[in-house]
Length: 114
Image (cartoon, rainbow, N blue to C red; front, side):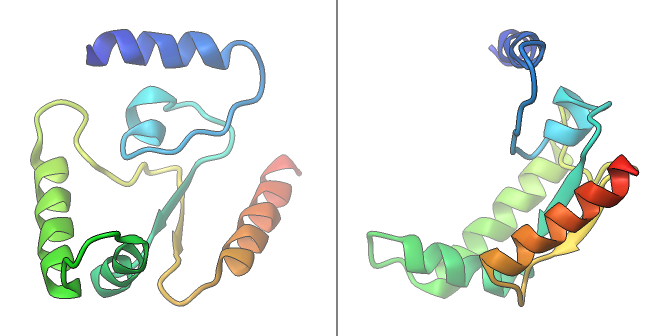
């Protein structure tokens, strides 16, 4: 299934500009992408954000544990492990708003084009 999805994503990208997000997008799916960003936040902030979006009563602490386990699993998996691509621009979003992050992405994109 993974190979089929990988081929589909790459074929789809041939139709023109494409914005993608995913844990292996910059390292495996599109390793030669013109614009490559790696957005991250500390685990406490990620858990807080997920808790705000949550529709159930899962505690922030439990969400932190789940996120930590997912990160570990994804980083250690054999196929397409979670890595920060060497050529990606790393952005720590822990203390940033969506507008601030968008502004950073646009500024970085403009500087890459030059």
